[in-house]
Length: 353
Image 1 (spheres, rainbow, N blue to C red):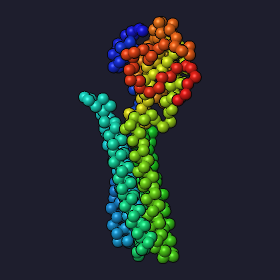
Image 2: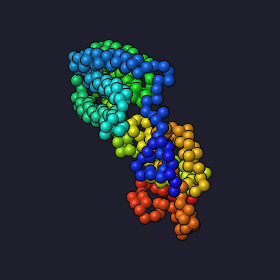
Image 3: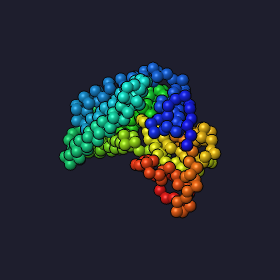
Image 4: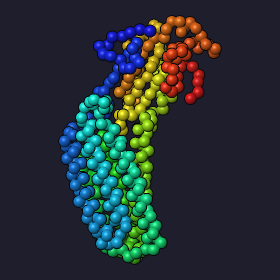
């Protein structure tokens, strides 16, 4: 093996390795369109004020009109407001430096909040579904005119809130999540307006409960989506668009690479992926050049810029001693090295996953 002096310490277990971190494009990607973080907060704050004010009005009118659909829409708007608050809090926390035991800072506060938000959507949606079914069985009187007027105002408010968030930096997944929340709510309002028009024209009161169930479907879909995505990040599952086995095969196929093991791909928070791996190369291989080539491959092909690569030469004796099947004996076969392997070993030979 060999030792490289890079002016910094390698990570734990990387005594003879080449470790490298690139934070230049990880996390928040910056404001490519020239919108500052303060401007983002102002746009989000304006959208939050519009939604919160109308939500209070809608609950009041929903009770007066006896419309469960309006109350369902108001509940959906509550989740919209929560998503905007989440985006604002996440922006503030992400701006703070990592310190002490929190080596990633508070970037995963967003993920914990998403879990709470998703669970709230499921519980609230379940209650509204129960109420809607009760009204389908035993419909009550609904003031269709009042319901229609309120939903039309709601459409205008949602369009205004959607426009405000569209002016913020949507390359941030926090902002994009809030944007999609409000856009879905806009569709719900349009459905409720159609139900109100049906009630006004035909007196079919069950249209209110049907519209409420349509809103519930949107709430449950969003809730399950939040729990699924946040759960993947908390369990440190590889990003959905990356196949770790295919990635490992691509790395080991590079010139001079003999083996890749201890390959880990995970998300620090939404939109911020990281990778670490131990790369074994032939004795005459140029570790420094290879590391740079692999980092560029990961950046270009997978968008991963936060990497830790430990690059080591395969010892000469390992190349001279072959195991059954003709492959060389590598450090991962030796007693004491990687006693508890972390995932599959990738070698440039036929293998299954």
